[in-house]
Length: 356
Image (tube, rainbow, N blue to C red; front, side):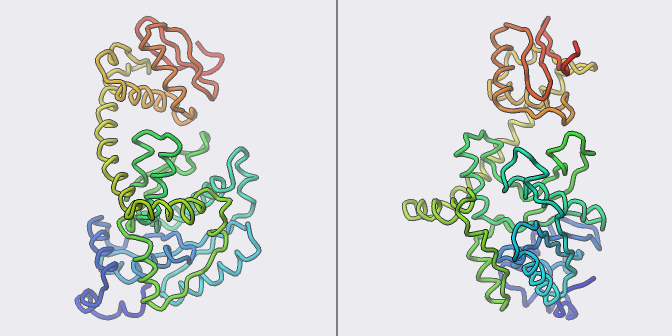
């Protein structure tokens, strides 16, 4: 186990010296009940947020029975990125933590035509990190998203007109397939842990400064052409002037919505399971007495499961199917990606193009 040199002291002595954020992180680590020796991979840019996570988790990991590895991804988008990766590795060495250098060979937007630069880079970053986690047998990928990131995420989703699932923001613990964007992928999931979601950005910055650590500065984080940067540096600060505490309130809203969303999702899944026949068709009578909010979710769940990951289910297409079902019109409804939902004789089935 590779840790900060201070880890050589006794566990009791170390616990007594932990500062606030470290104590809170240790509590969250222990609540996860990781197996002894579990490997945790921290996505590490070397910036303030990931540096705070790496430094604090590296200090408390052994008390929770875990080992920490850092992973730095070089997207190859800027000339300075190689220097930044060297700096990240130097910081990791100071922290006493192993650091994996992950370099992406191609410009992300070339690999994901139709996606913007932010989304393309995000996909390739997750692909590289997931591959590392699988290669070294990591228990999870640990990311440094914090309360202010959560506020930005919730606000962005609300501005897009998202429902409860989008408005709930990021979960502290989740499992997601990587790649999620490729229907031909193997669908293997990785666990993602975000233990800093309750912490404010200023708390992380103060912790890094208190440890005497110098973060890597990525100038692209100030580039206002990226939507999230504009939200972070311009829009949210103005909202905070008008409504002090807005970021904390948005993050709290995301947590409250998550409970409502989970309840509705559980209800809808029970209905979808009970109404799906052995051949995959859906009994429409199951929707007769369901509230619209539940019926909409039931259809989305059914479409996703029958599409087996090859169908990208949009809210617009779910509404089209729901309207046809509610009116009893029946017939065929195009749902995208070469798939068609067919409502006939009280049942709904999903056909590929050329079938049925």
